[in-house]
Length: 246
Image 1 (cartoon, rainbow, N blue to C red):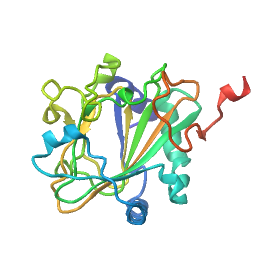
Image 2 (cartoon, rainbow, N blue to C red; image 1 turned 45 degrees about the vertical axis):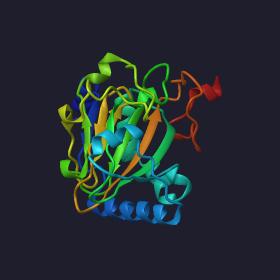
Image 3 (cartoon, one colour; image 1 turned 90 degrees about the horizontal axis):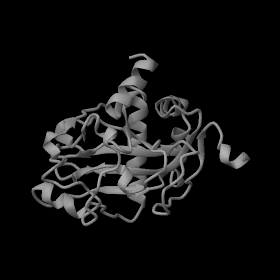
């Protein structure tokens, strides 16, 4: 797919899977880095309360915020031009600014799902340039609870969410199984608009599903409210912050 075709697809559908952005060898190294970081941290489980209705039993997640403060490997990845050039093109801006990062591991056989939602509900912005890049460090077939999307849903703008249980859309109106499963392989990166409705299923496979989320924005796109803070927020990943020179 050409660069212009990628941009058209993203603008039409609100998501884009870039195949092989990293090599499988690189993905494997980052996978080990993720699991090493989590092994050194006090375990926490961020499973949403609403996810219990989807899991069909006890499920769990392992995660950490601000991955680049625990390993320099992730700091290098955040500024890798293979990533930042795609992010810039999809936003239509030369400048890419960090919002936050997260490591997510869905453990084997019981990895928690995420109900359908928009990221915009968690940290709304004024110009809606915010995007997410989900780096896959091992294969993510449907059995592992891959990401599911509703193509074109970003064109509806921000939708009202239910706060209780994790800021999600009504389960009856937005069933997870009706969304498009975006299966991925190690090294693939899924780009999403923060207005795109998405979620993910339970990992029922015998291996964990390991991902890194990098949430980014155009630096001229300001938060609509002071609702989300993270270490390193505002760091420039590509280009400059014009507001700093105004």
